[in-house]
Image (cartoon, rainbow over all chains, first blue to last red):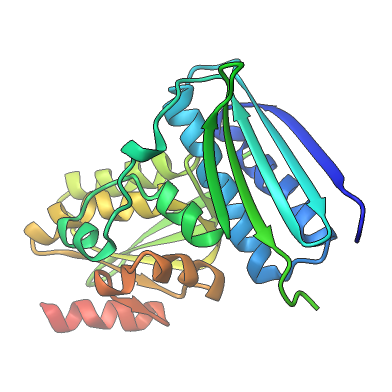
Length: 144
Length: 117
C-alpha cells in the first residue's frame, strides 16, 4: 500500500457508542491486513482513549462529539482522536508501576498505561484551536 | 444496542457469574451492581465464568479491582475461570495473574473454594 488513505468517524461521545467505535477501528485495521492479535490491541487502545474522553474530558455530558480519523500509509496505521472537552497535561499523568498498583489495589487510571503498552507511539496535544488530540501509531511489522 | 449479559447461579460453595459479550465502560456498571447485591446478601465467594466474554477493557477490570479488598476482608474471594486467550492477554498485560487465581475450568474454581472452607 503506497498511498495514504483516511477513514473517518464522527460520533456522539457516550459509552453506548464504544462498541461502534471499536467495530469501526477494528474493521479498518483488519481491512488493511493487521493480524487479529494486533487488531485486538488497536481496538482496546482506542476504547481506552475514547473512554477517557467520555469520562474525563466530557465528564459524561451528552451531545459532545468525538472525531476519529484512521490514516493508513505504507508502513503504519495512525489513529487521531479529537475532542472539545477539558484538557489535561500528559506530564501530570503518572504511569502506574504495576506491581505497586496491584499491591495497593487501586481502581481506575489504567487506560493510558494500556494505550502506551498496546501501541507503538502515543501522543497527546492541545491544538491551537483548543481541541484535544490523541494520536496513536501502530506500525506494520511482519503482518504477512 | 447492548451486546452484554450476565447470568447468576448460586451454587455451592460459591456463586457463579457467567459473562457474555463485551465488558467495557458501558456494560461494567451492570456487573458492578450484581457483585454489590451479592455482597449485600453476604455472599463473598464468587466465580466469574468468562467463557462467553469476548472483550474486556480496563473499565471491566476495574470492577474486579474495586471489590476485591472488601471481599477478601470478609473471608471471600473472586476467582476467574475459562477466559479466552484474547481476554486472558488483557489480564496478563496488567499483571492480574499475580492478584487473582485464573482457572481454566469453572469446576476447578469451585473446587478451590471447597478447599478454602
